Length: 191
Image 1: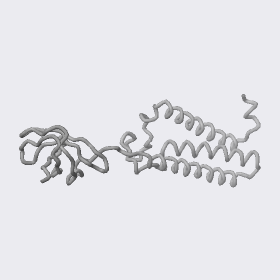
Image 2: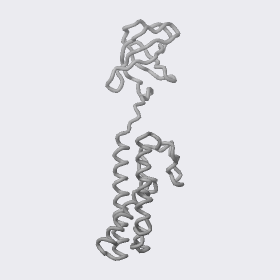
Image 3: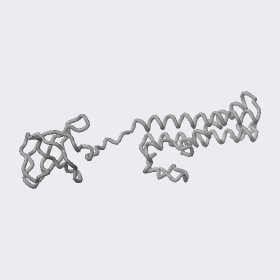
Image 4: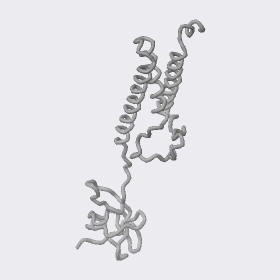
């Protein structure tokens, strides 16, 4: 093992350490994500963002664990290749390694931004159902609640409902949503 590093100078060992450490953490992070363990690790690195409550529009931060490890991995690999194989010299090796590291950070950022756009909440905001029309699905008793089918956001949805005037509304009666109280639609008959 000592013979393998005996022909490397200090600069080459620096690049090798960057590549090995960065590559190890990239591989470890990738494995943890595939087995589902990646969500519980704090990766905000004091950026003030709670890793459990990251908003989808934040997407990619420059100091994330992904970007740092990919930067060091590519910095080390490209720097070692330029310095050892191409004999590019110390300045050009560091410059090329930095450009490669920053490019890998940019690629990781684009990947996270693309994945972030795939996310959707699927939640319905029932308050925007006001004004929608539908029919009573399960009769609404006097002073009670029943179920209505409402054409809401281009789809037929069922909601709990009560009558605005407190009177009973029979099954099949056309209705209009006048307001929302908690998660119960308040409806009136369409005349």
